[in-house]
Length: 278
Image (cartoon, rainbow, N blue to C red; front, side, top):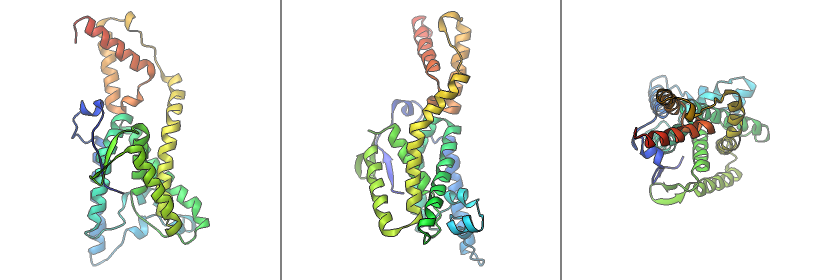
């Protein structure tokens, strides 16, 4: 994945510590670092054991030998485990830090983790569907497809956010994703590589999640949504409901709030200001 970083963040991130790493992103960083060390240890040991052969995504092994776990494990491995592979690990960290933390703040811990894992699985399944047409596909091990899905979802949510591509070239998020999409699509016709198909699958999943997840969320909200009327409850009840909603934002992200819950917070904030409580 290309190195990148965001030039600035929105008010929500600025109010919650610019340099703070969110819990899921922190956990993913630890996992990737540990896996890299374990891969290098076994590969450089006298056993010379290459975990990529067993845990990487190999279409032949998945389909013919039913090694279904590879659909999940490939996204946590690294393609390069030599000293040069540290650059790939660093690129993964940077993408997670600058885009993943903001997505986790918006989606919440659970929804971000679900998105991350499902994106990787969806990308692998798409590669397996294309495999019969390109039986020359070779195995690969990389988090690149799911990271591209993270970038795509980030670009759809913040299309005009400026990103410093390679820390040098300022480019809008939506334009960067389009540029990468064209590069990956063009490269497939030259390489016919499974990783490219999975990369495109990650981008597709990012779009589908952005396009349809809010509709599914709205469907479930009709069953779970509660009515909030600030005018009919006393100050203690207002504070309790505000605390509950702030806890929900902390655990699940501000994007998880329903329309009525957001309106309640606005009304409560206005009422507290009018009463001199803020």
